[in-house]
Image: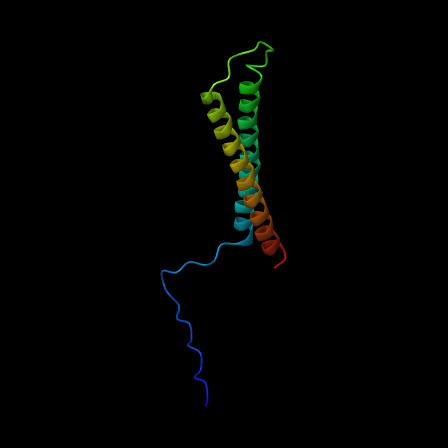
Length: 103
């Protein structure tokens, strides 16, 4: 059984060329900086945790309520979500950048 010849690609007049590698490198650089920005935002959430737990960086005692516990849980979830997202974005972008640079 013979296989048919593969189809010959047809030039599309409105088609565009693939972007040059430099455009992909710039896009990867922007994504790497975005992942670093997510790490900074996660750090800001942790500063909020410190503010809540130390009563605004003072040593004055305060009454601890359920609202404070809920706020701490939300701040920790937001911080670790930012850190996890930044790590995933950084690793995937670095791997993609490595593929572009080694072609």
